[in-house]
Length: 372
Image (cartoon, rainbow, N blue to C red; front, side, top):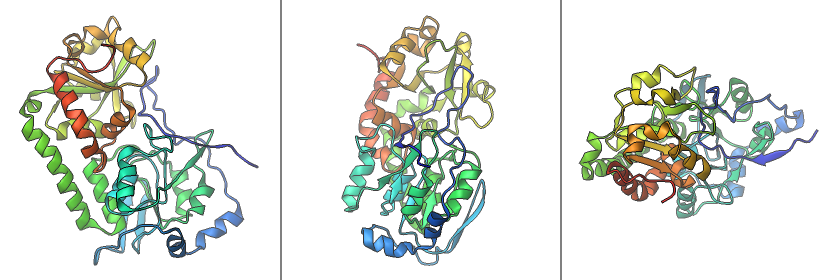
């Protein structure tokens, strides 16, 4: 039976009316044929040579390595040449190590072919071939046969919503590294770099990448001392008819990006955390109670121009102090929103030149985003 496959990119997710999480990793697992499964034993090294795959060797003594994650342990014995990534951000990190993945998800906010500008630039600088974009069924299921055909040595999904069923299926294809504990909950972009570095057999290189990227963030922090005196809440535009504002929690990568720049979380974060349901990475605060969330600045990504205008003109929301005083920054550019929603060693330097001036303008009370 033939199923429809499409390329899909996930926009940053939002609370719905019922505060449920929209996950692209849902639905039943599609069964692969026995004939296709037999291909799993093919030597990926031959495929790498044939495709001109670009990969970097492991550091001495770094492999084998056993990676511990939410679904158990995965042992990687040799330096991967053919890497498939699942979820957000991981493809950037793999490329930062000098290895070009053979398969990646389509990036929300990417170009017509599904690649972010910073990822494309890195692959071109490396002289590599752009990877194949992974397909998904109409139900949101990954095309496992496509992954199998890519003959990966390893599948990396440390920042994803991978289910255990999907994980088990992927491990039939290649060693698979899932997220440490919870879906879509990397501890930080730094920990993501460490996971990828260990998986590729390059832990020392991981330290170098982290130090270089952190240095760029520290420079911005030093050049903008007022960031340290600014409290913030990070959320998103309202949906029509919604009665709650979504506020992301400190473990979310986009929130960590701002704290890496020196800004401080709202002192009422405990109130936000009290509204978090399950494994969600955000809380949902009633619009009538927003005054209980003090913040010098509100930062958010905008799902659409219509939602942004609806948000800025909402009779209750616009009374919240950071909105009323013009201390807000709404990210209307999808690439910039993605670069800061899922910060990586590639997206961070790409975003800083544009994002920092916008941040300063918002802190100064010159609201950024929406109609002039």
